[in-house]
Length: 493
Image (cartoon, rainbow, N blue to C red; front, side):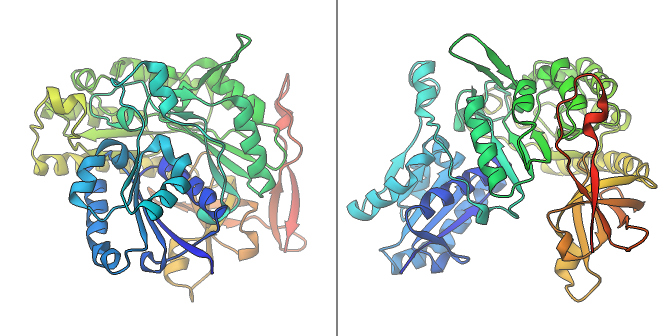
């Protein structure tokens, strides 16, 4: 009988990718996925430490599963990821029924840790070194890199996948725990990344998203002295057969150079979408956050992005209620949102994180009620701009990679069959269509829009009435003319 594995993931896209790799590793050991924790032989929680709510959710889940683990002592319970790296002793105190605690840099050992826990009956810990525990080289080596086993069953679909191009972060923003939980910034070998992209393409993947804590900081130095930047990486993988779209998140404002923007503009498969968090519209707050740029620098960077990449969509992140944020400081964030015309912004209420510089240096002096009000106020400014941005798309014909049924179609399966997908500028689009279109890129005429969604209808062949499906031609990197980005059409009835 096959062994059963259950894994629950909390947090960012990095964690989603980590879970996929863990499942791929354990499938090679004979495990099959279970949909319920109580049906599994191994139960894993992949965790996040960016906000307190994410940690509370995991401790609640560990509490709920305790009776089941006591009644089934042969089963293995594991905590993986950022919480494991940061709070290993606290986890075992609060949840002594946990058998495996495995940090972000040790996930390649997960199969070994599970077997050791079974044979010894004792908790197994696998953690990377803290930044102050050893030399930089030793700390980097303790965050092990290993060739990932990609597992399509863990992805929402087989034609979209994440690819991690770098590990860790060296920016040390005062509010952020990531430099501690994911270690020093390290860029993966371009050859390894290319091999992984080819593997994904062979699995039927059409869209890849490069992941990095600050993805545009990617910089790999080869043994012969050559270097590869993110722009160079785009050029390396751009012509991989089967790959139609290339996305990348998240960007750091100081590393948004012209070489990268030129590549985004010139390479047809690279999506014209930039996610560039600013976090605050107030220089005093940015300084306390240690973001290492000013509002004026960010505005200049934003203008340069739009000049270099005509039609580019830009989104951002904001933290409200950071230590010492006055009403005037918050007003400056509102002004920045109002003037910057972001496609959308992700807005978060500040949550103090033990182990960060902000927790040591600054009191969390903004009340929860004030944080909530500022969050809602800033969202209102952003929603107004998002509506303008989305309604400007009405009347245009866009290419949509069809990802599956819309949320409404899932909720009401007996209603009209609605499909959803994203444009090349990352706009969510909903339209009526047949499930046979899922996984294809179709042309859609945008007819309406809200602040969050575009609505349209599929452009059909005038003769057959069938959907026009964009089939990527063999796209060469443009040298002189932009004609290399041309697409051909086929018909799906």
